[in-house]
Amino acid sequence: MTPLPTYEASAWLRQHLTGLPAGAHVLDVAAGYGRNTRWLAAQGFRVEAVDIDATACICLSKLANVEALCADLESDPWPYGVDLFDAVVVCRYLHRPLFPSLLSSIKPGGLLIYETFMRGQELLGRPQNPDFLLEPDELRQVVTPGFEVLAFEQGLFKQQTPAMMQRICARKRAS
Image (cartoon, rainbow, N blue to C red; front, side, top):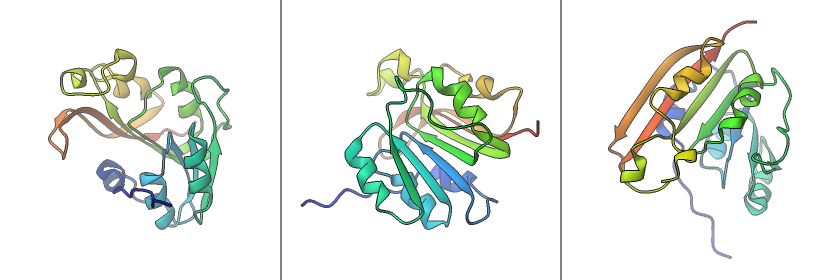
């Protein structure tokens, strides 16, 4: 059996998910094989990872501090309740109809760490479908007024593979 590839967790996540105590409850949306899930679990967080890929979920469910759920977030109902997570992490995934449910799942005082591709990426590579590309300032607009924006970036990021990205770290205001 070929070992699964390992990738470093998102730098944005590592930079901005600070101040949460060990044992905090964190959701990793569209977790895949868990580059972020694995890092979150290693920090001592209780992690729920959700992804459509059953094989990935089986692999993640074997990790300590991780509960994995296989679900199609684009056709199944949102599987989580309100005010459940201390933080929600989304990296390189966009399905706009999820925004209200996803945001409601964060506890007051909890964090949203989100980064994905934005318009302009279609000139650099995938994704090219506009359904998977944020408009300028879209994440900031989505979280207003219920969240305080702690950090926001958008534009061309010259990483290993250059990409047009939008990133936000926001704290949910007390109800």
